[in-house]
Every structure is written in C-alpha cells, then in structure tokens.
Length: 339
Ligand code: BGC
Image (cartoon, rainbow, N blue to C red):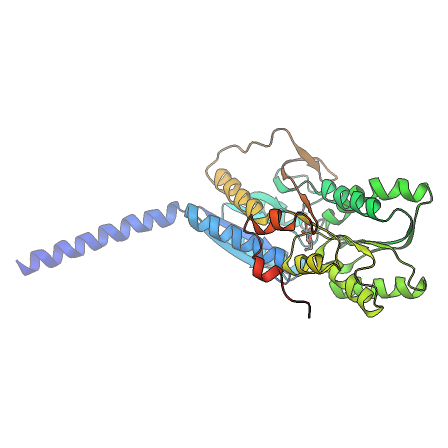
C-alpha cells in the first residue's frame, strides 16, 4: 500500500514538473536593453515594464548599459544568445544601435525601438514613443509665450539621441520666428553630452558669464538639464527669475515647479509607454500584428511603423490634476517646506 502511495506521489510530481516545464517553455522570453538607471524616468520605465511583464506571465530579461554604446551591443548579443523572441531596445547611440537590430534580425528576433528611435537601419522593426516633435513644440511655445523679449539659452540633449534632434526641431518652430522678428536672441546654443545635468550647468555658467547674467529664458530639453541650468542660475541668485522648460515630470522637477524655480515640464506617462511596449512585445512573440494606424517615423533609411503617445504640458497650475491625481507623484513628496 505504502509503495503504491509513494509511486503515485512520484508520478504526480513528475506530471507536475512536466506541466510547469511546458509552461516555462511557453512563456515568451523578452529582452529589454535600457540606456541608464541613473535618471528617474528610466527607473520608472523599467518598473512599468517589469510589472506588466509579470502580469502577462512573460519572462523579461533586463540589461542596463550605463550610457555605453559598445556595452549595449555586447549586452544585446548576450540577450540574443539567451533565446529571446523579442528585443525591446532603448538605444544609447541611435546610429550605432543599428548593429544590434541587424544582429537580432539575423537571429530571427523581432525588435521594438523604445522611446528613442534606432537610426540608419535598413531592417524592419517597430517604434514606440511619444510624439517627440510635439514635446519640443510644447517647450518652445511655452518659452516664447513667457519670454516676450530678451536673451535665451538653447540647450539640446545628447547628440547621439535622435529624440534630442526632434525636441529641438519642435521647439525651433516657435523660437525661430521670434528670433527672426528680433524679439529673442539666442546667446548660447549647445548639445549636452549624455544629457548630463553637470554639463548643462557648466554651459549655463558660461552663458551667464559671457552675457553679464542677461539671460531671460532657457530651453532645457529635460528635467535633468533643467536642474543643472537652475543650479547655475541659483549661484547668481537668479533662480525663479528666469523661465526654464523641462520634460519628464521627475519628482525633483515637480518640487522646483511648486517652489517656482522651474517653469514647466512635459509629462510623458512612462506607465502607459512601458505597458504598451510589453503588449507589443507579446503580440510579436505570438506572431500577431500590431496596429499603428499608418503612423511612421523616418530612420534616415526608411519609414518605421510607430505607436506615438501624447505628451502634456505641466505647470504649477495643473500639476496637481495631471501628476498627483493620476497617482504619478505623491502629494507629500512634491509639497515640501522650502529648505
Ligand atoms: C527621453 C527623455 C529623457 C532623455 C534623457 C530622451 O531620449 O525621451 O525623456 O529625459 O532621453 O534620458
């Protein structure tokens, strides 16, 4: 009797192992390559994708490149060797990442370019992001609306990131005509290496020195660079007296907006972006089509089918409604006593 029970139990365990093995094998394996975790927004992207992958039962394998293009290639090679079916790739260097898309395509792996577009690749892939020209338009329109006349500093993001060009292009649609009319003068115009706040601060310090502090507005492409520029302004007791744009709705930027040293940010809901990317990855893994409504973004070689979400301006007036009520930021974190 005892022997029968034991062998029954063994048979049950073997069956269970088989079933869970099959389930494991059926779990789509997705690779995710991110540029950094040193900026709040990319931490949120990772969290959003991990949560959605867990909800859908996907095997998500994450690599972070620390803003190193060669490292990103090596890490993606490794993900490919692990047998992923889909690669979600947020490139550090838009152009050199085309090597990664090529490697993936040769291994039969589908690629989703995440937030930043991989440039110059002749291969087929998808793109999910926000409407990045629109982000720049929102920043430029805001700046021109606030600084009617005066000197402005134009900062652009990393020259290796295609988004930096798109943000600038959008902003210039508004700044360009104001400069032509003679209302605005650009006294400094520079890309910021790797989007580094310290680099933005250094450029801003130079601009202030060269213009005897006569600066009225700063086109800062994201909250990190805005923070750097504001530090330079604060050192000259000018923080809060100069219009400064931003992007990402980072907690530190929300605090600055409430305290009056940063004028706006652009909210791109990374929860929605991450969720959508994972949904797309699952569809590709299962061989289902992705609806893009005919929307594309050009990668210098050809049109890439794209899903583009809508960005939104945040100022002190609508911050509560957009960021706090939606649960993106918590009230007690944003409203803190002035130091
Ligand atoms: C993203 C921004 C981000 C920047 C720096 C851009 O590609 O779209 O949201 O602030 O990279 O990481």
